[in-house]
Length: 177
View 1: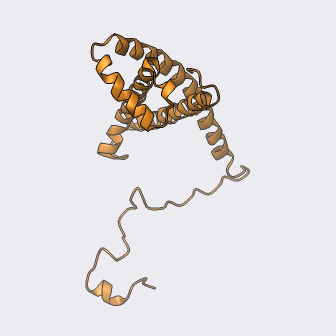
View 2 (view 1 turned 90 degrees about the horizontal axis):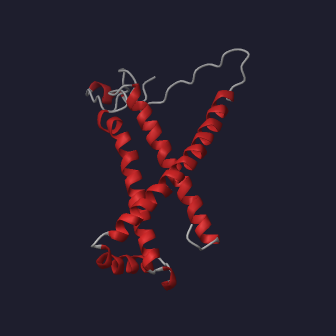
View 3 (view 1 turned 90 degrees about the vertical axis):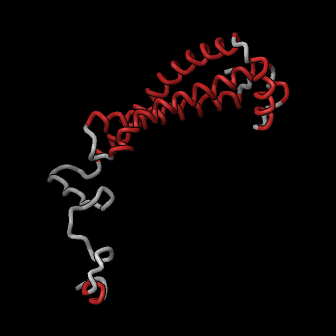
């Protein structure tokens, strides 16, 4: 039985006719049949746990590296000749985001400015790891680029976990964390 009227097929409308070519990357695939004797879903559960463990481990490493780089960026900006001109603009920006007036001193502005730079730099690194797959497609690149995409995505998750942890600490202990 044809899913569309016969007129569609007789007119040669290839866009609406079911495709006989090989499936695309977006077409659903048949699930592999389970091997006898193995419970279904066990490896998927293990994969989820290992991905979560990797994300937490990567968050710790990312947090340590980000804090070290953050200190270096703060020291660089503090010594920069342009910082006295940039500080008032950063103070207004922080107040627009809801920071209280007392948090917008020179050190607070410097910390916030450097933190945004470090986060943006990290996102550039993660995004550049994903670019080959974005440009050439999943099938157009090799396993090295597949791994780079997955590691880049997990690094992005790691910085998000670190960021949420740091923001929660700032919420409850408003000291400089």
